[in-house]
Image (cartoon, rainbow, N blue to C red; front, side, top):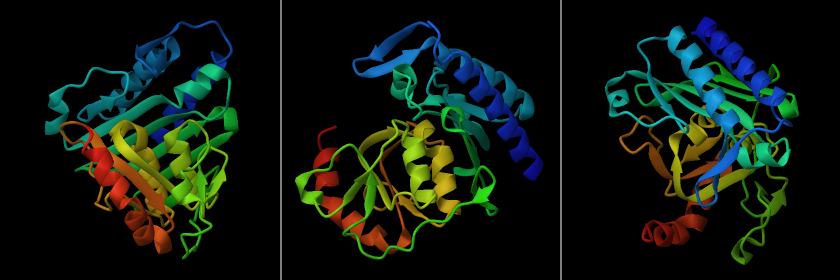
Length: 259
């Protein structure tokens, strides 16, 4: 597994180098749907990753933001879960808050995770049972036990969360989860339907750094599900997870009822 993880890291690094080389060039960009941007680099990186990762494990299934989903992946024991550029908005705006996100999921659980963030000079890696690292330095979550004062990567917070503290937010949800793993934030929460490719690698990073991770209701996350979605993600220091679930409960119930 260690050798496989190293190969995945190398492939993600090649993808990151390719993406940053094209970062300030005149590439094509459009919206897949209103408010959902994509660019030609997303697709090129996706194709590169699919070719390289499929060569590495020919039996593995494939799930990516930029590839039409195929139900055949549900029969695969192992599956690559990929977001070629997580944080496309920051990529398009020339901001550094984006990363190449690659995870290998085995029987519904991430076992290898890599975030390659070349614009930030960061490589985040995790392997099930072997810890999480940024640029080779082991990560560990904070030991916070009080929800009040918890740091949250966000532009702003609702008034009801006035007792929390905002910290700088990259556009990439994976990098925001990784901030909790690194002890740079104490809590990351979403209360909407989200896609597995956005979070698979980062969830492993957070768990291996000692974070508590669940959906918005405090339930375990699963991967390679039929719709490839989960309702929210909640990543926290272990000592505040129960309180965070309780804080979000009413909002989560209201939000899920609107789908």
